[in-house]
Amino acid sequence: MLENILRTLPQVLFDGITLGTVYAVIALGYTMVYGILKLINFAHGEIFMTGAFIGTAILLAFSSLGWIGTLPIIILVLVAMFLTAGVTGAIGVGIERIAYRPLRKAPKLIALISAIGISFLLQDLVRFTTEFANDGNFYLIGPELFKSNINVPLSKMASFLSDASFKTSFLFVLVTAVALMIILDVFVNKTKWGMAMRAVAQDRDTAALMGVNVNKTISLTFFIGSALGGATGVLFAVQYGTIDPYIGFILGLKAFTAAVLGGIGNIRGAVLGGLIIGVVEMFAAANLSTLTNHVIGAEYKDVFAFIILILVLLFKPEGLLGKALHEKV
Image (cartoon, rainbow, N blue to C red; front, side, top):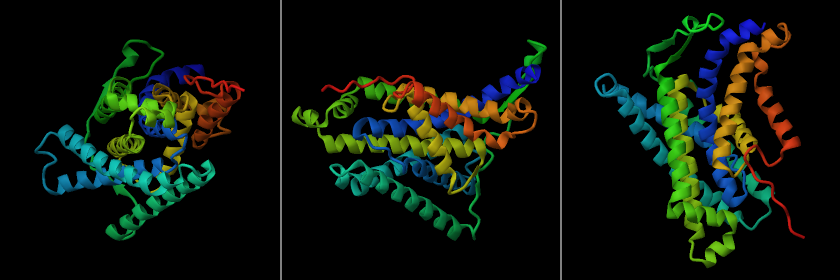
């Protein structure tokens, strides 16, 4: 049993890191909005899904124009990500203005219900559009942009390891996602707008008294978070090929779990939580049947992300990198 687990471990790590980076970038949107508004934007998963469809449509348009194959594919995907990020960022700003801003002083439960309503609205709009455009086919298969595989001959390095392989899209997804995370971290910690966002997160009223435009800062937060979600949707479509209007629910839920696991409101914690959940999920998918003597199959891999979440909430409720808040009496 241990030998089989060790042999498959390199492939599990490759697949887990790829999936974990997707969770991590989506989790950034959750953690940014929560850090400022103390609101869980449950529509964020559907913004990710919308971005996947918009990006795929743009790439299919490039293909129909004959650009794919004649122009560098990396440039085309980056252009699709940039355009998608702009659209989903604008959607995020619109959602904040229409669904959240009027409810800032309302009980948090009302804002939460509004977020769930927006989530269903986006899901049904995309489903209707897909059905109308594709004669009832809810599935869009993205073009196979990165067809080649890279083999890693690990068995030559250690006999107990098996060879691993990954698509060239793995490198693109990983490098792009890491670049997005670094850019966001620098923006939040090193720029004036980032300072304004941190000030609003700490004390909204005091920040307003100090001259910070709270409404613009919150709108910018929604724009950045939604733009990241949309760009990640394009990465997901490129890596996994098949998308549907319902991918936002489960992926958004796992990304939210990653944000809570790392410490919601903490950007680096969201990244750490996403990577942990991605690797654990892939490990369970590859080895769960072996570990349980075929009693439980890989279809139960989703359970482990939430088991980890429950354990963290029991023993470290603030998350792995979060800070405990001490209420003064």
